[in-house]
Length: 244
Image (cartoon, rainbow, N blue to C red; front, side, top):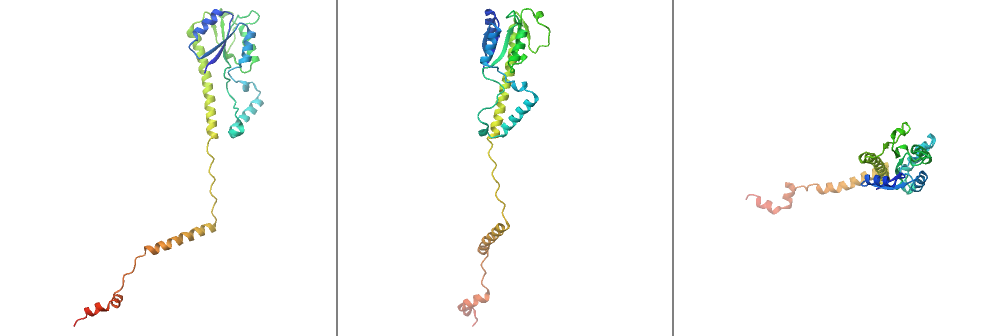
């Protein structure tokens, strides 16, 4: 997956140099020479991060959480094919802006304006470039400020950190979807057999006794004939045995 980087700079040579510094990273570059063009690109491409829920009031956040919980509990056939995503494919992932691109608006002012216009954007999605870092107003910014001329290891380290954060977000989304699919694909529990009544138990007992009686008769050994019966059955043998 590639990540879209928007470069706001009016120097063609610097844009080419910056692309060379980051050429082996999974990035897709767009550039704008004016702030208005940059806003148009963001409107057309969208923003990579989906931070709309954080811009809601507490009541709205509670509603979003309740809806998400209900969606997980419902079967997938009822939820439909749409699943909320934490990111947008092809959206602007990082904005590199020059402080003095336009005389009417500084880069810091553009960042403040863009984050108000696009709630999904945060200050951490920007990198500010300047020729004189001492001229940038001293504030607690949530974006890094780099002084020109740029050093390749410095800008590469910052961009690689942003790529790792975005990749972690994608992995988290994928893992969440897999867990939902595993929950919906579990087989339904088999119904328990009905409990047997007293009459059924009596019938089963009688049937078992009836089956056991013939088996016991077959296993019973045959009785040997007694001596008296043997004498009655063989008189010839008794005469032979009588002394003369």
